[in-house]
Image (cartoon, rainbow, N blue to C red; front, side, top):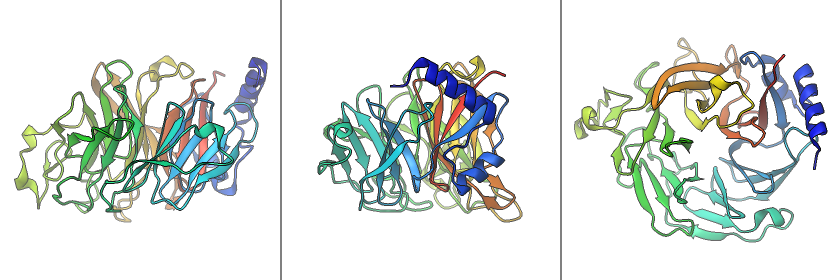
Length: 373
């Protein structure tokens, strides 16, 4: 294990040099172009993680990374030590294993149609045994079929089921569900959620906060994407009849009343594709960032060339109590003119207060740190 002195020396080196020691040509472009608030630095933690998406941290420090392809990765090595981490494929030939979660020594992996569990995973990274099937009766539709999963404060595994379309009214879709760790007790927690690929829980209230991707083909600047809060089970967030706060769908608006849905706590930019969302619960960043919301915006595809791209950044939602009072850029520069350099996906706060950011375009994991000058 690295000593405190080792950590301090590496921290000083990173601060002085904004190190890109493990950068590839793709991540070099991101590091050269990204813009951060004063005092923050971005470095590459691992650059050989093709299509890196959702992240989960094991009890022994192994970083597990899902993809929207066929592989799941395990990355060994403590961020902040300056040692190049080891990246290995621990599962392959899976069906878009985007979602990963860790609990009681086991890695849970969400494919489109099922949830798998790899027991005692950190003791068997070089010889991973066959997984156990937790559930295999989820819908098979691949459109919005990739899943983000996480365990809530109630000990249940939360699993969204995205709409199998741009906009449609299909039963058993556009929901966030939850189940017991063994797969039993599967139930719908929230409805009217088009496609959530990121959620977290408030550090104090323990309420579920989640992002939702707005529908396409309503114009360059409509409808907004959403940041939502579900303080209890059974709420309806409006899809497919209503988008944002009060944008009625031209085809499905007759199905519901916007005034009766649960509105977003904050509307976000149109087509920004908000994915990972986390409260900053560490203490390494300045006080004004603590318990505030950071969002990874994957970036638009459904905007005209004239309007330009939206998203491709990290954004900050500032809170006052339970009210979201502002929405502002935090890390920009994942695009340069019309060139896409990176696409942020997921966020993970580490014990030392730094934050990991996955990027499926560059195939990388970055580490965000803060140091006073």
